[in-house]
Amino acid sequence: MKNLCIIPARGGSKRIPRKNIINFLGKPLIAYSIENALNSGIFDEVVLSSDDEEIIEVALKYGVKVPFVRDENLSDDYTSSTAVVQNAIEILQSQNQIYDNTCCLYATAPLLNKDILKQAYEKFIQNQSKFLFAATEFEYPIQRAFYLNENNQVHMFNEKHYKSRSQDLTKAYHDAGAFYFGTSKAWLEEDFMFKPHSSVFILPRNLVCDIDTIQDLEFAKILYKANQCL
Image (cartoon, rainbow, N blue to C red; front, top):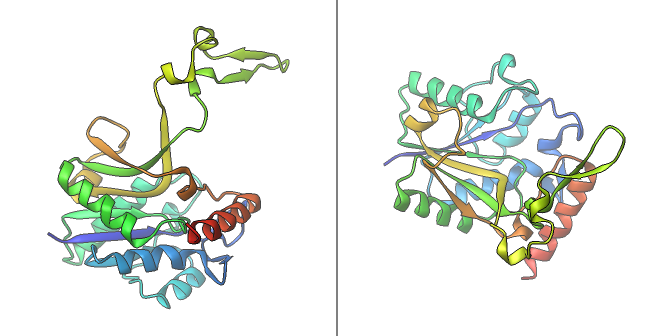
């Protein structure tokens, strides 16, 4: 069984310029994902999908393969990760590189480690599901969420849960924005993985941080340092 890891990393990040290669505690942010993928021992090949020369140059120094440069029309703000992975699989197949399973590993997941990837892969194989992705539990019951209307007035989405005890409410989870295992066949056939054909690998909150702002980046550094002490 051959396994592929694809690390998407476009150059056009807006809120944090050059986010994928920004300095993160002495190394480019993307280096953590590359090293974890290579050191996990579960992938036959670790491939970068990028449209950016500087990102490619930096990533190559850490041992990733770059057999193609991503097309510009797959590098805008609206292109999904699924489309990027599908494109990579198809290009590699055209080069006679065929893989049974493919993992999409985000370049912005420095809180992971090689053992988490190994454990997730083992669960993916054991479950025999089309996909397995990282998720984490919401910190607060989503059933008690509210919104503000155009007049800034408070409205609950569902008032019936106002007096419910937290322990009586169904736990809710969200995508951790870290990694997504899938059979290569499923990646090419499916355009949505949040369905019963998928399973999840639950991560604790201290291993999850969506890095979209400078504040997120600094918080991720704090979490990383704290995790090293656990």
